Image (cartoon, rainbow, N blue to C red):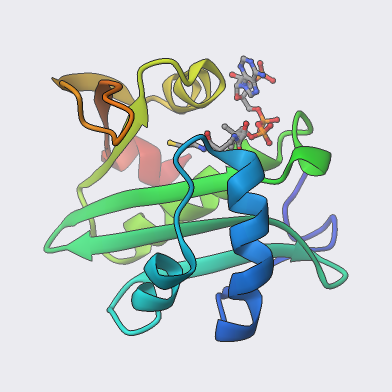
Length: 156
Ligand SMILES: CC(C)(COP(=O)(O)OP(=O)(O)OC[C@H]1O[C@@H](n2cnc3c(N)ncnc32)[C@H](O)[C@@H]1OP(=O)(O)O)[C@@H](O)C(=O)NCCC(=O)NCCS
C-alpha cells in the first residue's frame, strides 16, 4: 500500500484537531498525551503531524530534530486503521523526513510491554540501544531504540 496513492495525506496538526486527537490518544495509549501537551508542540519547532484520509484522522505523530538526530516522540494509528500496514508506512514517511533533513539517527522510546510497536520498529531496522528504568508515569521501563540512517537506507 502506498500511503499517498491510497488516498492518505500527512499534514500539520492544527489547534482544531487537538480535541479529537486527545480522544484517540486516550484509546491508543495507557499514558495519553494531554490537550496542553499537543498544544505546546504547535509553539515549538516540532513536526506535529496528522495522517488522514478523506478528512478522517487515521493517525498522528510528533517528532523533533536536534542537530542530526531525529526523535519520534509519538506515533499512533487509530484502532479502525490498524493492521493494514499504515503504521509501517507512516513510520517510513517519518524516516524519510529525517533523511531529507540530513539526520543520521532516528531515536525513540517505547514501553517495554508494547510488543506491536517494538516489532514494527525492529522490522524497520531499529535496534535496542538502552533501557530507561521506570521511565514512564506508570513506572514501566522504556526501551531506547535507534535507527542509523546509512547510505543504504537512503537508497532503499
Ligand atoms: C504500533 C502501531 C503504530 C502499529 O500500527 P499498525 O498500522 O497497526 O501497524 P502495521 O499494520 O503497519 O504493522 C507493521 C508491523 O508492525 C508489527 N505489528 C503491528 N501490529 C502488531 C501486533 N498487534 N502484534 C505484533 N506485531 C504487530 C508487525 O511487525 C507488523 O508487520 P507484519 O504485518 O509484517 O507482521 C499501532 O498499533 C498503534 O498505534 N498502537 C498504539 C500507539 C502506540 O503504541 N504507538 C507507539 C508508541 S512508541
